[in-house]
Length: 67
Image 1 (cartoon, helix red, strand yellow):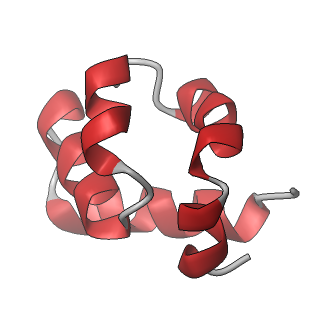
Image 2: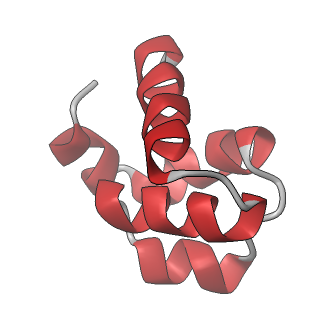
């Protein structure tokens, strides 16, 4: 699934994202609105990790996504 599809199905995918990154709030999800760079930035801030690590986590999540 590519990010155009993820963005288009954002509301349906929020639950899967919450399973992976439970510290993100509903406000965070609303701000992210399916945008990959916003997701990476929020993960980086909430979990105190590097941008590279956040990118890797999102890449892994996307690769394993079954929708």
